[in-house]
Length: 315
Ligand code: GLN
Image (cartoon, rainbow, N blue to C red):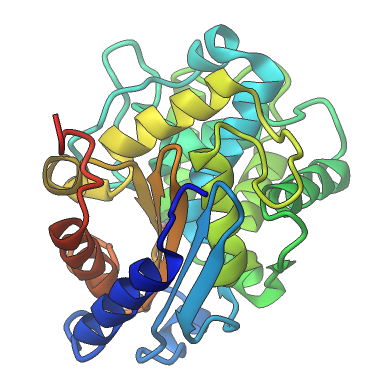
């Protein structure tokens, strides 16, 4: 087994969980009522190794919407479908150095990367683009479930409706991209927006999302049932982007301090991938000013202080 002394290992994670719990900094997202109303005290962590060893702490059964944590999985599925050349003719690989929803494109008039809103809307435009919207959503939901090895993956319709109603910035981003002819031919504008909001509104809990992260840690093969969900290259490219662009404007600092690919979302969810070892999922709704979960970032700090999982540890 990849973690021989599972008892000691999980005991240490449990200690970190308790050390981080008293942290009360930050605020829940308020741009939609469904997130504003959420209990700020929720605190949950789960891990799943590439051998399928699992454990969770705290509010592990509380469902939350994935928000931006859906973006790496959406990208991975587009990569599997289109291949890297075609996909990256529409979206770049560069950290934007700007806010996640800023209205800007790179020097070749493409969205900077698939993990900020503009790039994720582009992926929503590309995913099974010639199918009906209902079938495209079904494909996404079914695929996310496969990443989770049939763990809990749901859909929050109120979040979807609120997202769509409070989306001036995302519409502005898309009109800006349409002005610059960024979208593939025959893109259905409203379908693209709806699919993007729906992807943000897909739900999981820390248990199921840790398995999704572990599938990325395992090269695209679900560690619970051995099913291959995406090819190796799609997985590699997803992790590379998470490493450089996964934590908003904190991505450089996170890569520097922790040396691991990660992704956060405005619901307070966060995944960390330790390649060839395991996936970690954290849920704590209070966010810092950059939009990352305060306890999530703190957990990562404590975690990397106690284990040598930084990419450049033990050289
Ligand atoms: N629904 C949010 C948006 O599109 C998701 C962004 C996020 O999690 N950062 O603005």
